Amino acid sequence: MTSEFVRFQSSPQFDNRWLRELPTDPVAENIPRSVAAAVSSIVTPRRAGNPQLVAYAREVADSLGFSEADCESEAFAQVFSGNALLEGMQPYATAYGGHQFGHWAGQLGDGRAINLGELHNAVGEHWTLQLKGAGTTPYSRGADGLAVLRSSVREFLCSEAMYHLGVPTTRALSLVLTGDRVERDMFYDGNRQWEPGAVVCRVAPSFTRFGHFQLPAARQDHELLKRLLDFTLETDFPELGEPGPDTYIRWLRQVAESTAEMVAHWMRVGFVHGVMNTDNMSVLGLTIDYGPYGWLEGYDPDWTPNTTDAEGRRYRFGAQPQVALWNLAQLANALHPLIGAVEPLQAVMEHYRHVYQRCWERDMASKLGLLDWRDETDAALVATLQQALRQSETDMTIFYRRLADFDPLWDQDTDERDSSQLIAPVAGAFYQSPGFEAEHAMADWLRRYRERLLQDRVLNGTDDVSRRALMNRTNPKYVLRNYLAQQAIDRATEGDFSEIHHLQSLLRRPYDEQPEEEARYFALRPEWARHKAGCSMLSCSS
Image (cartoon, rainbow, N blue to C red; front, side, top):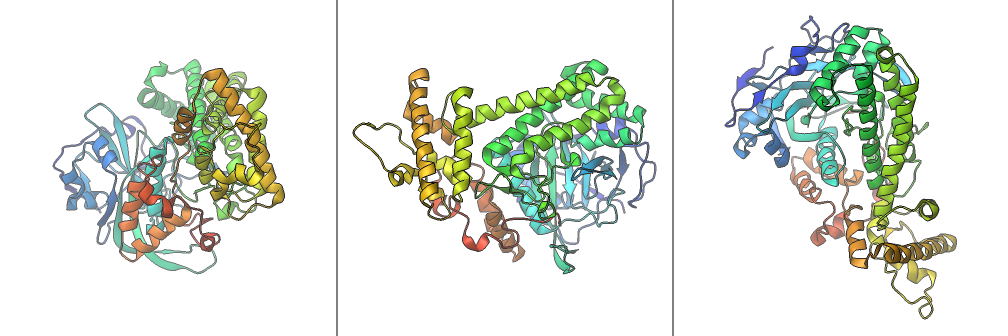
């Protein structure tokens, strides 16, 4: 069925380079199948029964050149549910492979994502618009290609929350209810239920993934591999120069740098991706595919938000930097046929380690209010802190934000503070009163931290006001905790979208104090949410 065409008040221009320059599957049916010698298939989104706009991101719309009138029109809901197209849109899904939980999975592809087209805005930027949950594609692998409201709310809110946290990410333009019901087994326990269907429109310069290169490499289709890589260089990395082995290495090096920067930001804010398969890694260094994710609440480097990963914990918080390196190695393996040498690829992997370490040190220094990182003191200082945080269940977000209130300027000779006095500024971060050993471990660390702050004051001339400002622009006050998202989902399921809009507004300013929001949103996770469905760990079910 062909989608109808509608118009907006604005006149967006589409330049669909991917379809124009790269080979497309000649079969024009949305039937799951193996697709060879092509990187995409033409598809038609499934028609939604009764589209209803739930929310949109004004800043994203502005970047695309869509007016407020466009976004609030009936045509907008029709386009971004998949029912209609703007002139120039050409919907398609792309083919890629990937390693899932460390195992090669073969062809994967856009199983429930459909690219509407590549918009060329007024300042020369290209933005790919992608619907998630708009129906089957050749890559759906027997699934229905649809999404439900709960996963769509989480994707919409998290994409925008991450952007405002300063984390590289894809964006979300809109969240639209389809008016249809979708059957899902949320816990994979045989209890299938009907849920409201929804579609999110995701936006990025491109959605090219590590897996796009892995699939032709695995099939030994080196001609297609080279064609795709050359296209990627031309469109997304033109500054690197003409294609060739040396440029390919420079490209991989840049991908490694942006990946290191992205993961360092995850670690800075306590974000856990949950599904770091190679097909969920962007070559632009953007966080992509918000499935089972979460923020650390009780500080635990071994925590994963993904029930599928509960036993192996491959994608736990503390493993993310190493997993990213492993994924980069798989991308390097895919490029080897075009480069013909192992040594430069190994050098890129070592470069990733160096860049990540530099980013992590920068961020940890800023989290602690230090102007620079001094390895001779700060590596041990951070390691000791991480041990102390684990001795009593300590909320990561609240702890670091409250740490800015710690006052190092007292006369130690005349003001001998006991442990309870020392930890008072951060006491609100504990889920229960710390025991004797935990309290003293934290107090001992704070004494060491005080000495380091005073050293920084002498060496760099920092003052307490600037220290607190640095910490408060590094450590967010508000993050999208899973239980907050679930509360918004519960209300939306009943037809009340107000909490989605409220969280959207709150998370636009995650570093601001927003005192009117503090009691509800800058708070420890309630005990009732510890094990409640959707409030802690999540399944891959959508």
